[in-house]
Amino acid sequence: MPSREDAWELLCEYTESDSLKRHALAVEQVMRCLARKYGEDEELWGMTGLLHDFDYEKYPTADEHPYVGNKILNEQGYPETVTTAIMGHANYTGVARESLLAKSLYAADEISGFIFAVTYVRPSKSIHDVKVKSVKKKLKQKSFAASVNREEVYKGPEELGVSLEEHIQFVIEALREKAEDLGLEGETASV
Image 1 (cartoon, rainbow, N blue to C red):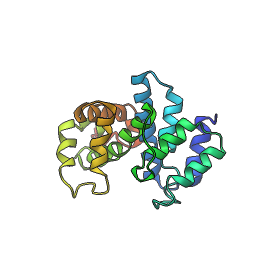
Image 2 (image 1 turned 135 degrees about the horizontal axis):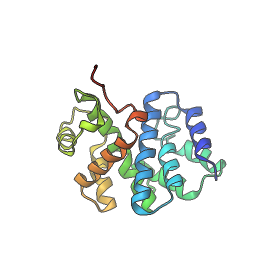
Image 3 (image 1 turned 30 degrees about the vertical axis):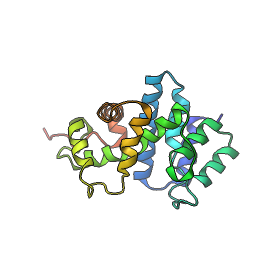
Image 4 (image 1 turned 45 degrees about the vertical axis):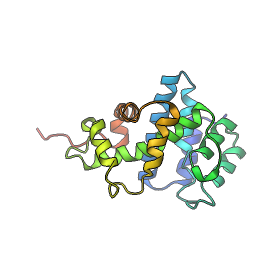
């Protein structure tokens, strides 16, 4: 199986956008934390999160993403559990999310991006100041982070069998662990 370094190189080969790379790193982090929670393979789950959108910048249409990326992952020897989970994160592929890995990726994807958006509008721009209540309030504002699919945000935790509040809190805590690396540490007060 390819290494995490191989996965990062593949992501960087296909993705130039810093924001898309940060999103990949965020979903990787949430997936690693979910793997710990469920007693699963942290490396495998992390790479699944890291690579779930690696082809999106070059192949953004529903006809291409994640199909093109999946073909590349298969050619490079990534396990079927990874490729199936990545296919399942896009509802339009019709690939059922049957594994815990697939359900977790689906649950981690949209909410991670949404929590980034909530963080960026905080005065401190710090994930440490983000609360579940503020995330839920922003979810109700359709114009806020309008590209985030609300249906997927709600359906993800449901598929995992956890409450929306519990899942949001889990994702916030996961992102806090890597806040500095993800650009979510916020502004520090000048001394």
